[in-house]
Structures are given as C-alpha cells and as structure tokens.
Length: 149
Image (cartoon, rainbow, N blue to C red; front, side, top):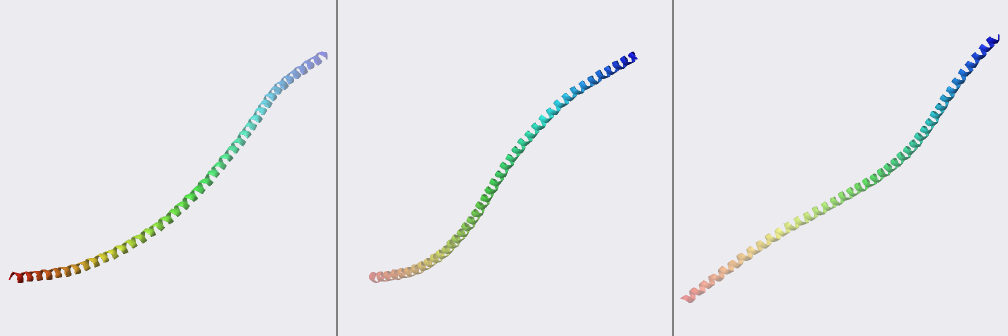
C-alpha cells in the first residue's frame, strides 16, 4: 500500500510540476500578451492623438480655405461691380461720343451751307465786279477812241 501511495504521490507530484510548468508558461504568455496589450493601447493613444492633430490641421485648413473662398467671393463681387461700372461708363462715353458726332455733323452741314452761300455770294460779287470791270474797260476804250481821233 505504501508503494501505491508513493506511486500516486509521485504521479501527483509530476502532475503538479507539469501544471506549474503550464502555469509558468501561461504566465509568460500572459505577460507577453499584457505587454502587447499595453503596446496596442499606446499605439491606439498615439493614433488617437495623431487623428486629433489631423482633425485640428484639417479644420485649420478648412477654415483657411473657407476664408480664402470668402475673400475670393468678395474680390469677385468687386470685380463684377467694377465691370458693371466700367460698362456703364463706357455706355455713357459712347452716348457722349455719339452726341459729339451728331453735333460735329450738324456743324459740318451748317459750315457746308455757309461755304456754299459764301461761294454763291462771291460769284454774284465776282460777276458784278467783272461786269463793272467790263463796263469800265468799255468806257476807257471809248474814251481812248475819242481822244485818238
């Protein structure tokens, strides 16, 4: 009976040692897994912090883009206003040019009429002067003929 108990004791001792070895191996695995878990937690924190920084950077970029868009819209409105003002000024100047052209044309027509009247008056005076000259020349000839005789 003692041999049996000894055998059983040795068997239990061996099983206990095997269990302790398994427990020790499991503790090592558990420590390794806990280390990995801590590493993953650290990685997750780092990724979270990086994501926060990216969000902040993206928000800053979006804010800057929004501001640039607002500035561009304001500049576009200014350019459109300037274009409308320039177009209105151009139309006013075109009206002024057309008015000046019509005034110039009226003055040209009036001047042409005055020139025609002056030329007509000149021709009448010229004819009268030539007639007087002919009459004077005729008197001189007649006077010369009388004195020649």
